[in-house]
Image (cartoon, rainbow, N blue to C red):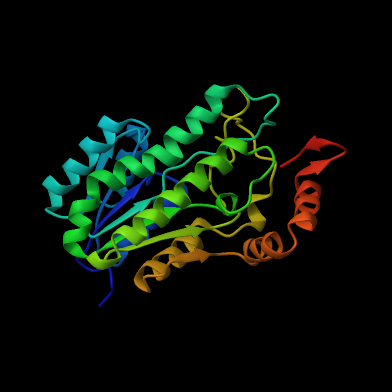
Length: 268
């Protein structure tokens, strides 16, 4: 029997990308799944695909405290408990700090950081009862700041600090708190990454075909949850970046600059 069979698992941002892949796999593994998203039509399509399975969906914007409270309350009302919370909802950006409007940075923090805080706050008592798991789907940008992504990096650093502090608070409660860093994964996140004016880019400068698929990424995340890992970095590039940044930070600065810029222009 699957580790997830019968468990109540909450996945934020489950209507597309990694979140949708997680929902699909969890339902296949016998979990009772709840997810939220900002677009009703995408959630309706998800419900239609999984008709007859224990899937609860709610239209919600995780940047709004009230939406998060209502979503988590509806999960508890529907399924009676929460075993695992996967804070997956997130947005990215591509813009140099000298050009960016501050509303872009506020948007990044509201979704990536506060969305994680809100949902975790409202679900935590149930997770403690279940001796369950809180997950943050993060990024290498939470360990190493990336150019063109000042707000994104700041939000992920904040998520890491929050989750690490929470982890130590609930150790004696039998709760596992972990964060996973997928690296470059094929999803819609780059198409909807915010520009300097907090508007979706609607373009993708990277080759999605060369990236890890959302399904494969979701498999790694679920494996890490089952093993109750502390952290999980999913790519060799990510592991190499962490190693280089720890021991050779000056060299890493230059390598990352070279990776993201050409002739002084931000590319990726």
